[in-house]
Length: 354
Image (cartoon, rainbow, N blue to C red; front, side, top):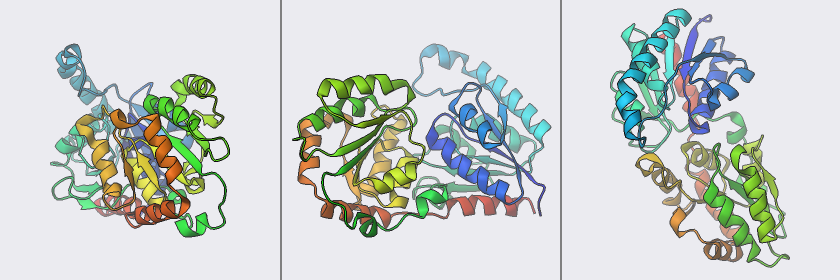
């Protein structure tokens, strides 16, 4: 059966948007028409329309960790978001709604359920977000990227594009590599100022002859600051605000230094790469630490909190860790991959709309 319409809801950060895009693209390949509900002026509005999906704007943003004025105005903002979402649902007439996290999922999901539309939910993080905790109680199908996150949910991993799941095994990729390590630093879609400061200082402590070659992704807003940090440290590197082919960058790296957003952790597991995770210290419910432990506890990486990450510590780790140890870490990370998420979410959409 074709000619069906899905309303995908995801926003805020790449950790919600890119899994949503993986699902949206898979639905489109099976003949679905896909609309995307997101916030105006947001990252999703920049990323989604160029990929050929109709964008439906609804004004709503984050509330946790905000000031008292935001909380005071929350009921009014929520009412507006409910009304706008209801208008989108009535106009688009989706056969199913698919929520992949971010606050924008909440008003859309609730209004969809109100008018009798089936709701499929996917939680990317190891600690469920506030919107998904509420929506899980009314959703028809619930999936998670990590085990034991929500009751009655099926653990399927994170929706990933095929580029991440089709790379060669770590031992095959590492074969024949010699010379200084290739280091990849990934700050995520919003960047990571802590990594942008510590990494060049750490590299400066290593003799140039054995210093790792570095590809450092900064985030769009922090590229000038990153360049200044490297110049001040007297270190050269390939510095970029955005990496177009993240999967290939993971595969090419001997070692990765990264935040521990859900997409980053599950992408690294799918590729099979060795990573030092430095969780974002202000993440809600410290979910990035829990995300990282999924791989680290299995021997698939290292975990260092931002407050403990010093140039000395990082330089020491880079100098004492050889490729044999990195292959072992990468192989253990690979054993934790789970790659059926896209198929599971798409299958649920199809089953609920027969």
